[in-house]
Length: 99
Image 1 (cartoon, rainbow, N blue to C red):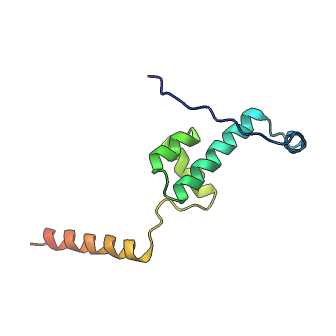
Image 2: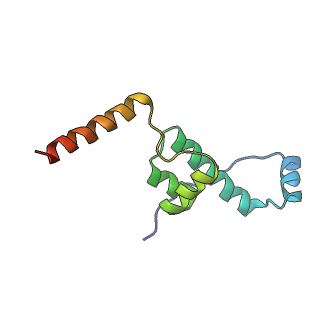
């Protein structure tokens, strides 16, 4: 099954690209890195779900989780209120199981 894609072009100053080339970063690698960085950023900002961010990064979910870990980005990032709600839900489930 072929998934439709949207092609996006990004202009880059030639001198910047030449510096990247001297570090072994060429067009294909640059595109791959840019997609992964965008995916990580959009996941961190909760714009994309884990699955959609992984697709943007061109990785399966487990590889994307590993990529997040390598870049010190938590997979689960609850604020205090969300964490309390999760604990309350677990307590409720436990109470229901012990009846």
